[in-house]
Length: 474
Image 1 (spheres, helix red, strand yellow):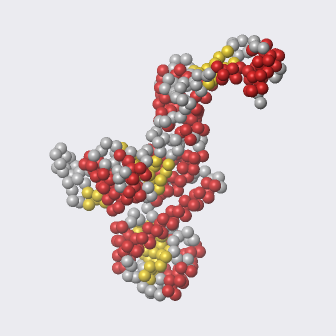
Image 2 (cartoon, rainbow, N blue to C red):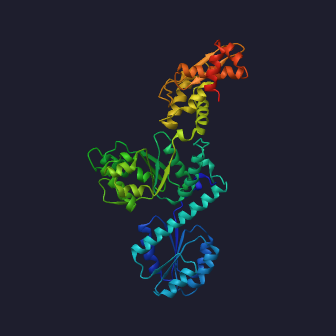
Image 3 (cartoon, rainbow, N blue to C red):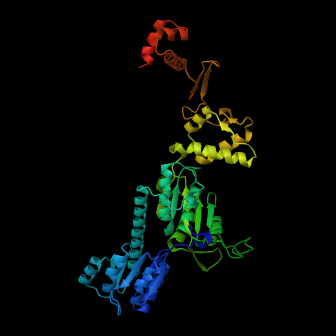
C-alpha cells in the first residue's frame, strides 16, 4: 500500500486518438467541461499502443480512418491485449457496414462526426457506468472466492465480526475510486462517519476529508459555510472565507444529517452536483469543484420525498451509490467484541485496570436492543467503567439497561450456597408458575427422574410431583 503522501486521486482517464488536432482539442474541452475526467489526447496513431501500455485508462475514443495505423489495424490488437478497456470509435464515414465491422471487432460504441455534444457526454457516462459495474462484479467474485478486502487497514477503526459489515467493506473498496456521490443510511449511532472516512481512505484521493453536520443550518449559513464568501459580501464579512468545498478540493466533503437540509440549501447543493461549480457569496468569479460528495442520514427518504420535504432530483443524484449500515441488534456477534474493547480502552484512559464482566451482565448486554447502536454501547460501558470500584461489572453498573421483553429489568433467583446451589436469570420478574416449573425441572434432573426422590427434595407429595412432571417434562 503506498504511503499517504504518494496517494493521488484516481479520476477516470480518457484517451482521445485522432489525426485532426483541432477536433481533438474540441472534444477534450467538451469532456473536461462536462465530466469529472482526466483527458489525454494523441494525434499520432502509431503511439497508441505504447501509451496504453503505460496503463490507467478507463475509456479509449479512437478515430477509424488515420494515416499511419487505422482504427481497423488497432482495434483487434487493443481488444486482445486490453479486453476490459471500452473502445469508442469515431468516424466521418456514416455507413452501416463500417458500424457493424467496428462492433464485431470489439468496439463498445460507434459515433459519427461531427460529434453531437449531448451524445458524446451520454456515451461516455454510460460507458463509465459499465466500467464501474464490471469492477464491482470482479470484486464480488473475489469476495465469493474468499479473497479479503484489499486494504484492511482502511477499516481498522471499525471493530466487527459481522459478515454483513465485511460485505459492506468489499462494496466500499469497489465504489471508492470512481468519485461519484455516495449516500450512507442507517440508524443513529451505527458509525456512518466511519464508513464515509473508509470510502475516502479507499478512494486514493489526495485531498482532505471534510465533515459538516448540516442540521440546523439555514440557506445563507449553509451557503457561507460550504462555499465561503468574499470580503464585504454582507454585514460582518470583514475577511475573505474560502468555504469547506474549497478545503475539500481533490478530496471528500461529508455532509451529515442531509435529511434536515432546508429547501433553499437543497437547490444550492443540486447545482453543485450538476455543474461541479459554484460562486462564493458576494463574488461573480466561478469556482470549480473537484470534491467528492458523501452524505449520511437516518431519515426515511421515501417519506421525505413523498411529503415534498426533499427534492426528488437531488435525492437521485446523491444516491448514485447507497451504503446501508445494519443496526447493532442485527449483528449481535459484534456486541461483546465492542464491549470488551471499550472496557480496555476506557480503563486505560482513566488509569485503571480493565474490569471483569459478570455472567449475568454478559447475557443482558447481548439481549439488549441498543436503540442508540454502537454510540450508546460505548457511552454505557465507559460510564460503567468510570464509576465501578469493585473490578467486576454487574447489572447494577448499568441502570439504564432495559431489555426487550416489556422494557423491565431482569430478575435473578439465587438459592443455596453450599453443596447445591441454583442461579437462574429471568428476563422479567417471574410468576409463581415460572418458578415452580424451573424448580420441578431442576429436581427432576438432580434425582435422575425418580418421582419419590423428587417429591422428597421439593417437600411435596408424590402424586403432585407426578402430575406436574407429566405436564412439564416431555
